[in-house]
Image (cartoon, rainbow, N blue to C red; front, side):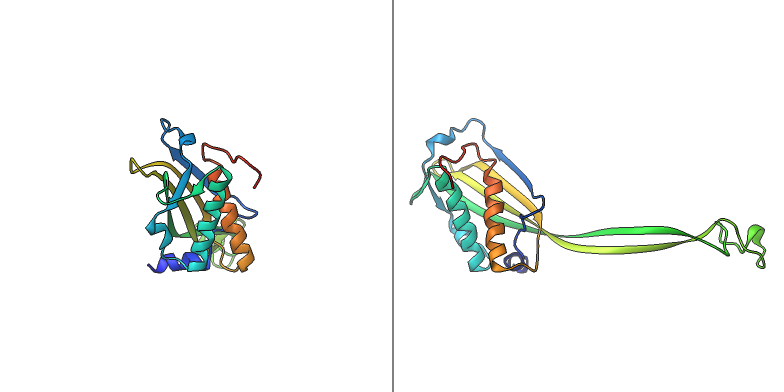
Length: 192
């Protein structure tokens, strides 16, 4: 549960950097026959901060309505939203040869003589940096309400940004959802 609340504090940062987008759908589905949608109770009660949940729902509604959908109960499509977070650690390091008193075998000077200096690289100075970050994935599932089967799933994955303003967070959510829906088989009918 704690990881979902983390998502509300550091939402997907889609601006200015790459976001991995993928989708999958049932190729036999005629997507033009869907005209209405409704959000699942799980999507409406996602365990993230309410303001960010509302931003997500609003952004998804905007994308669906741009494609001619209207919100209705019951809807032709059920919209389910899920968030997955994963902690990552990247290790980066440098190894620098240091010239001086040691040869490559760790002996003093050439041939192990402690009173003479070596002429090759001695030991290696290694520095390692750790970069901890959280990667978030937003799943948008569209479910055929009658068949109760997923007909389309869009996913967006991105490293999360911590220190952003509410305006940036709202824009990032909008851009993330827009990027995911770019893969939806039906393109927008009108300018957004």
